[in-house]
Length: 151
View (spheres, rainbow, N blue to C red):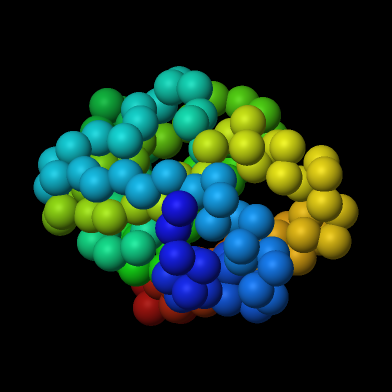
């Protein structure tokens, strides 16, 4: 079992109480990958929600012209794979380790059971996810506007 205090450092889990962290700690799996190792490709089935404990993950997508485009590089505390779980679909991007990386995996089935069994925990989880995703969207919008203005 993962130490609940290690989970507290995750963006998605930082506002959760000890009880909620304890429930999540029981289902989390620790995964280690080496630099260059691919976690998933476009069209792969999802294994679950990924939380970065240490290291960096590059999320990329194949563009229409055949070039692979980096969407984002995520570091410690960030998460990914959430859309494949929430939308119940395959991955639409590739996730690859930019350096040796330690991850926490919340397996898809365990995540679904957890949120179905505990409405308060589900609400906290999804609220944290919405806040983090909204923050990322605002940051991307600011960058986009900055590029447009300087162009």
